[in-house]
Length: 291
Image (cartoon, rainbow, N blue to C red; front, side):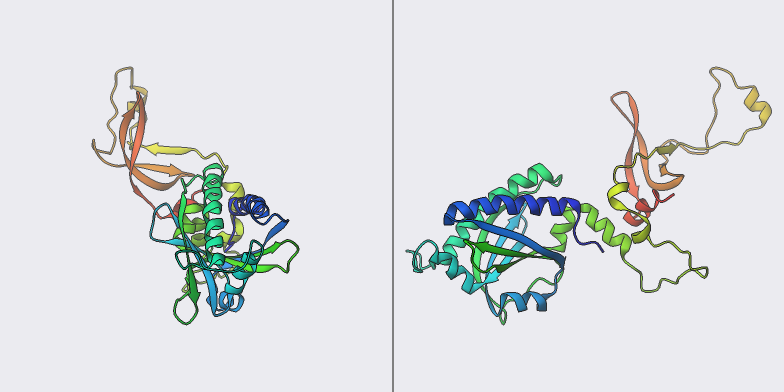
């Protein structure tokens, strides 16, 4: 499965550029952020990077209970605070380093929401960042989703790692094409290779980025009727041909002569239309463009 799409890469690229500008203003020095890789979450690998104790910043998405999480070693938070003064606690007993990260997260959240409106079609809204001290022996890491690894350097310092984890459910809604791609590339355990060895693998034969812009003709079949040639030749204006469907029966929508949905005929602004009442699976729908 290809874990990133062009939209995700473009989103991250612009996000990093704008957050770099934000950090440069806050710390009054140059800042650099780079994304090293993005891949399925491996909890053991994440723990090896962030250690047993880490700063965790959670950001809500579209008001849901699921959250996008950012992790960094706790020691890095203090290093950041040293850029703007000595470590201390504010009136609410929160260390300055954690309060600083929360302030940065709130401003970065606003940047993400604006970028999502510009680049994504999913109506995404990010908000309500929260911060806590994460401990490996108390809190489990999400096991289903995508982890992105970032290198952050401030003022020429040694880069430190930040790990972002996006749960699979949020990722599928942010980038629906990833869900389709994952389903198509998923290999069924009981699949048997064709004897001639020429069977098609969906993940190898369908270049998704190119297929999304294909123009496909959708046809709707109201019904069929067999007639004698003589009766066809005798048809005239005003003649009636009865079809093999009753009024109210579902009609079929086809692409490449393959059924992908059923629906009922309606009229929209003087045009005939079909209100979909039943769909085949996403895998079967995608297979209609193969030929």
